[in-house]
Length: 401
Ligand code: PLP
Image (cartoon, rainbow, N blue to C red):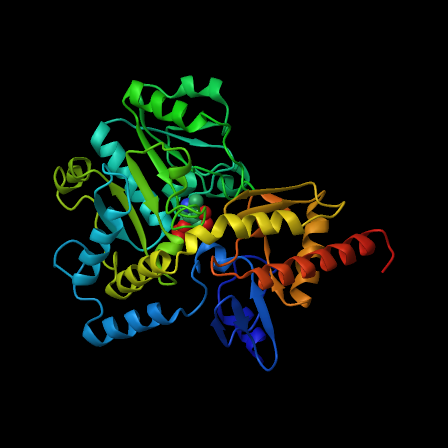
């Protein structure tokens, strides 16, 4: 059996149509297959590899930490220098009130922890979230997910979840003194990069404060420099009570975090004690990688490069079949007329060596979220290939190919 057959036989599948590219190694913005095969990674492993693949500083940090120690004890008991150094560094980059970090392994887990913290701290039960939001696949995170299609097969999920439409000011009144927390993205990623109307996030903040509900921002996709600032929330200046970071945080290793004020986080230490625990949360290798990644992000000035790169995509991606290019830094959605056209575009681009994708709740939108290190020439090349692939897809749709 070849690798593909083995993959399909022995590994659990998440869909009937996996990409199933055979990856030998990855470096910079490229994934390499066998022989001459190479793909430009335009999605960063879904908003993970912000610094590209195999950044030498991250590899070195991981190697050094591996030679010191791997896992030693469950999260929160021992003082482990990679965790401590990362927490200190992270806090130096965050708003003042977000000064206490709970490390976990993933975005879903961080969302779970944030929701539990909000319930514990407020003594309330209701969670408010948004249509077309994605916060993870565990049952709690799924419960606040914004798609009935993804939820219905897995009910019963969490009770007391209220769903609002993102961006609708008049619905904010539904957040009430029963609400423990509102979980929101500062830009909805899986909805196809949907930006809130101006003033919406501050109105949301105000409503939460008025009724004593906690505001949780899930910046799993928008955080860690992707928007051109370290946090997406810096564009609005709205500060949540709890912040979720994941994906790019670990520099390519699994890591998530929920972050709050020290006073708030203290709630998880009693009644019950050990109310939220994790064996591998804040794994030393992940924290060492994350610290190196944060340093690279700053030293290489990668965030200042984002607006120029974003503008270049906007300048180059022009075609009659493109309805709109929505972007929040280097988190971009290229909207087309249909999902079939998008699927054809993705396939044609892959044949030409560019890896892209669609969005969970917007399959007619092409996902473009390259590593932040992408250079001008590479953007030019990527856009040329995307436009060629789009033209080929349009022709095929019209029966001309
Ligand atoms: N939150 C957001 C906004 C996400 O986009 C995702 C994953 O795509 C998650 C949470 C879940 O993260 P993970 O897959 O690490 O559990």
